[in-house]
Structures are given as structure tokens and as C-alpha cells.
Amino acid sequence: MTNEVHESFAVKWSRILTHPAMVTILLSIASLAFVMELFTPRFGIVGIIGILALAFFFWAHITAGTAGYEAVAFFLVGVVLLTAELFLPGGIAGILGLSAMIVSILTVGDNRLWMGISLLIAIGVAVTGMIVMRRVFHQKMKLFQRMVLTDSTDSEKGYVSHVNRYDLIGKTGVSVTPLRPSGTILIDEERIDAITEGNYIAKDKKIQVVKVEGVRIIVREVKQ
Image (cartoon, rainbow, N blue to C red):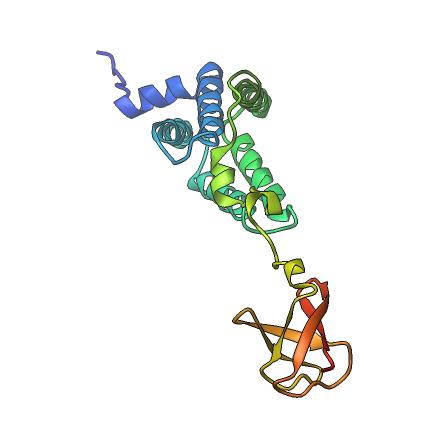
């Protein structure tokens, strides 16, 4: 009479998914999927595929007994730090996050060498995918464009820090408040903040704009 040991469905699949070849495939799918997500305007099916690949990777090793839940927690901490890098300056959070994710993957499984090789192959696949998207398909990283202001704010696109009123030079008007030396003037029924050349100008005096320096409208009293 022989004793037969029947493996459960989970154990069978964990043994398959922890094979070095399958590990390489899962990591490559995950890394390529997340790179592809950078070129899409919102999170979608490609990102879900990447998450599922990582989920199968960690689940298989935990079921096989070659990894613990602390590896998953360490990986998630890395993801949080890497995400925080998008909003924090300096690059430290990104370096720590990426390091945590790499260490988490390397500590999974029994053979560190094979895991390291699989990780390098996955990184190579991700880099290749990024180059193809940029150079061949001429795609831009839409995710970063949504999170970071990339448009230049120049005058050609209508962005100005202030309006230069050079059109006022030489025009005359009247002071509606005393200018000591700053105050308000009226030119062509438009109230304008102005400043004198240094002299005091009383209210209801005729003035003339003699100079414009940025936002400074410099006026002089016109003697009757």
C-alpha cells in the first residue's frame, strides 16, 4: 500500500510560477506594462496587467514558502516613495523607493543570482519599450504631463507677468488724487496708478506720462 501525496492547485501553480523562466516573464510583463502606462493619459488595462503580473509573482513565492508578506510590504513602501518623488524635490524619495522595490524583489526566492538576472532582463525590456515608444512611435509621457506643468509661460502664448503700457507715453490727463509721489490719474476715462518723478502733484492737476518702467507709470505735472 503506497501513500500518495496530492498537491493542491495553489502549490502546483506556485511551483510553475516560481520557475526562473516564469519569474523573468512575470517581471518583464510588469515592468513593460508600467512603462506603457506612462504614455497613456489615465490608468487602464495595461496597468492592471502589470499589477496582476506582480501579484502572481509575489503570491507564487509566498505560497511556495520562499518569501513572506514583509517582501510585499517593502515593495509597497517603495511604490509609495517613488510616487512621492513626483511631488517632492531632491530625488531622495525616488532613489529610496526604487532601491526598496529592487531589494524586495531580490530577496524573494531561493536563488538570488537567478532573481538578479531576471530583474536585469525585466529592466532591459522596460528600457527597450520606452525607447520604442519615444523614438519609433514618437509618444510623450502623458502621465508626467498631467502631473507637472510643462507649458512655457511666454508672451507668445499669451502669458505675461504684467502689461507694459508704453502706449501711455506722451499722453496727458488729470490727477484724481494727490501724488505723494504715488497716486491715481485719469487718462481717456481710465483710472491708472502712477508715480511722479519725485515732486508732489496736487489733485485735479494736468499731468503727462513721461516714462514707463515695467508696471511703473511715471508722470510729470504740466504747467499751465
